[in-house]
Image (cartoon, rainbow, N blue to C red; front, top):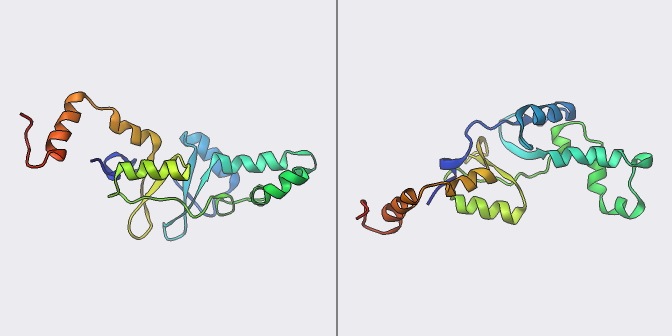
Length: 165
């Protein structure tokens, strides 16, 4: 069974809680990612800021009069608050859905599916960022030859067997 640290990216890009809207937008394009973990001054993950969080600002402020219709306004109070945001701390979704490096890839997949997120910051026991796992990282587990899958089954699933026969 694969664990998160086997497939995660170990050099994740991130932003601080004070990073500006403009810098986040530029870095998303530059790094070709769709979201960043947001770190506090101690290096702990406190949220995630995504393209969707940035789009709220344009969508809400771009409407005539700068506010959505009455019904939409009632339903999107949080969106209106984000529309006025200027830093990652104001824009981010918090708390971040995170996972540990020793959790299983299966658990990561279930967490992403259940929480409807595309990536999970991987944190140590102190909540500090050590990596990131995305949906494509999880799917890479299936990008193996039949021989590799057979070897894993023989050595890890069938107890007492270290060599395939």
